[in-house]
Length: 155
Image (cartoon, rainbow, N blue to C red):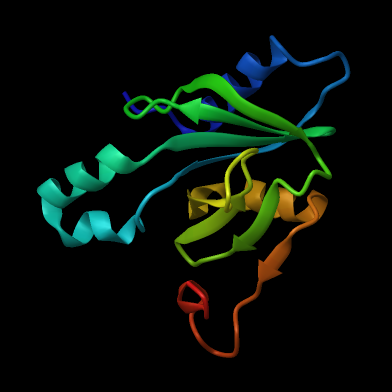
């Protein structure tokens, strides 16, 4: 049985509540994946999807009232796993967000990495992604002119 978005969010909040300091409040959570564009999965069929799945990493990125917490997510069941990093809210962890019609891109700067990591976030998480943008200082590339949002310059 597939886990719903609400179920995934609940599992993340429960796992973070076990290690969070008193007073920590959940604001938003998104699930996403690294690697090649998710559109590629459909282009190359089952074999191509297996190849791209083997190079992807899955994450939950959670916004609290004080921090941005990144958990690994399971490949199959999408359950939260260990915390990868927890950084102060104003640390500049989220460097860029590109909103798309189906897939958005959230760029996170992990400590010790030379460049930000691109995380593809499906539109079912758009309300939470908007909550991130309302709280986290980040550069966002808006849609330009009449071009579709997922065909912005620089993608």
